[in-house]
Image (cartoon, rainbow, N blue to C red; front, side, top):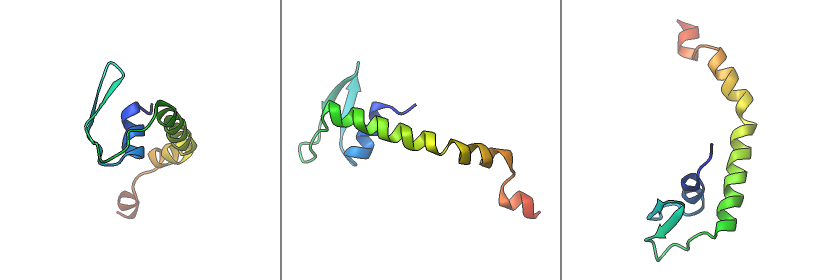
Length: 71
């Protein structure tokens, strides 16, 4: 599950903020705070990216690491 924090990290790398009861307190005046619409769009984008890699994650779990295979 992609969170608001994941979206903000992606949109505003290095920003300082807190989230209390879904309220964002922004402490980085030099970095523009993303709008709620931008955050929602980024959550959707990150979730789609994560979901698209489900097959690769499942396959990686199905087989031992390359180091184990070579031993």
